[in-house]
Image 1 (cartoon, chains in turn cyan, red):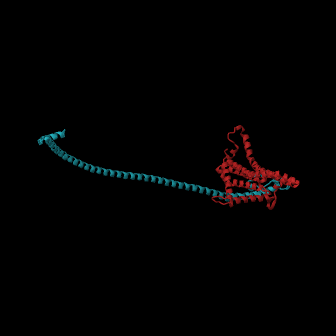
Image 2 (spheres, rainbow over the protein chains, first blue to last red):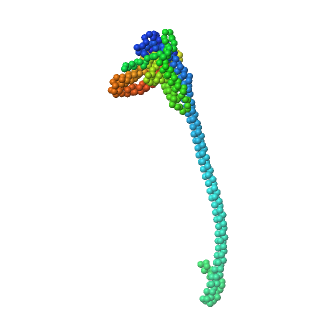
Image 3 (cartoon, one colour):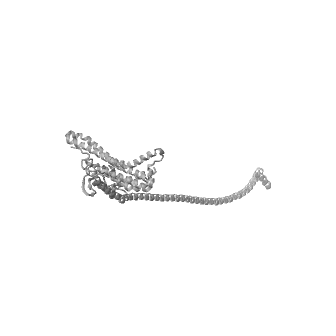
Length: 188
Length: 249
């Protein structure tokens, strides 16, 4: 069986069979030793041809295709990662820009509000001062007017009192006495 | 009508190539189907495109490439990739010739013990020569398992040596016997269909349904066996080569 060509080094050298191809026909084909030499020679030829084709052409070809695909996929993934990083950076820049713009807008708003407030305050102050000045003048006028009026009131009161006394008593009262009495009653 | 399930294994010389000693070297039907297998593998591996997005043929080529490569890596490690062309050739040659052999009226190359024995011996001597070349005498440590008590070591060594030298026998007979038995069974059941139909008339036609169904079922089983035996042959080759690459158990 398998030992009939023991020591044969692989199919390439395995073209020896011990048994002669004497008994052909009628037997069990796999054990017909007369066919062994032919099978071994053709197996050696075709397996060596197959081995050469596979090792020199087929495997480098298919392996190259698989490797090229692997490299392409890895390259594409790296590219995608790079683009994603770029877009992340752009988003971050946009957000920081937006934040700084927002703070700047707030600062400008605060500044202009403060300025407006200060201006309004200043205007209010000057207006108040003017009003206060006018008020003071008016008060002074009122005071002088009142003093005049009060002195007039005394003269009128003295005249009225002298005439009342004359009417009642028929005597013209002493002017000094009337004045003193009016003063006393004004004070009282 | 006589069923001859053995007839399909006959070697028919097609033309004579020459003589070696007193042996006639002929181009036989077996040679023809070896050529067919080599041609199919070459077309598959060389005519398929190398596109970025593979087509159907290229997918098959790439799947067989990846399948054999991952089998080697998982059993013999990265160093085993040195033998990738050899194991790929063995696997594809056996697988394609087995699958072609299922087609009716074809010949199955691996149903002959001489062919499977030659392939198994090729693996055996590759392991032996590479193992000694790479590891020197340390290679023979594969016969001395670790942690075996001294007093039974001679017995264990004897068994290990015996099993090592019986490897090509089991390696070749497994493939040969599977293909032979499968094809005989297929032929017998398919023969029943014809025999019933020809001998019993209408009853036979009805009665032939059962063996016909069995033939269909057996054919699908043989498809599985054809692939599986090629895979078993390849993975055993990997395991044996692993011994040569890493002789420490």
